[in-house]
Length: 388
Image (cartoon, rainbow, N blue to C red):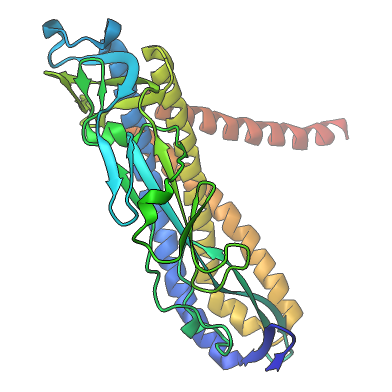
């Protein structure tokens, strides 16, 4: 182990036998990932269809209400309202004596501390062992999470406090209304538009070493020369008065989630003034994006899991490094192709279950394409023979 300035370098060697043992664990974990990808892909297709059908149902039954009025005729119905989100609630953070008339008040805290970073470089050796060179570097910086210095590779001269005295927190108003309607906590949490909040010096009288610099509370001796253990605290608020668009179920003068025929609890909130159609179209686009992200995630999990199943085989081949590299590349390619094929099959079968007509049409089209390729290939083989 060597040292250079504020860094330390460690060289470790993993024997071939040790790698063989650890490859068994990788193989078992790979099996779990591979098998787990199938229900993930299946569930995702059901979720996507259920959400889409629920949004289509909402589009058919939603009633737009002028001036966000609670009309008896709309009791129990899905309504669309647009208006200003207002509250008289005053949110207070007693720890720092900060208060504001706001929809939400958020405290952000960071502590000045030692931070360890590492970079590793591994080289395979003839005989199956691997030599890894790891360099740990140390620097001071601000972080909103505690870095445990007792786990640093080089602890001497890099001690952090054992805990963070102050941490981030969030305070949310209980009474927020749009027009005649009181919003649920789930709707309130969806309201965006956070902005920086200025802090009064008078509120910090009871906090030792606390200073206000701009919109930051600094807890320490000198803001220009921070020391390990110093804190920076800032606040952001969601101020009342912002326009929002909401689709939810009217229950008296409250808005609650709408239960679709698919059994999904639905409510929508967008910032600004949007029509019901625009809100639902936006939600459909978000649903499509989420569906594709999970599909790609399932494909990656399946491919990664399949390749990890062959970890013992790659470990055996590492007696000759070039051979293990070739084998690893080949397994990676095969794993991707297998995962791609099985993902498509899983999604196709799920479509038959969740979208029977579309799923069957896609399978028929796929079968037709395969037959066409086969026929064209057969005709090409016959053509040279006829010419001869």
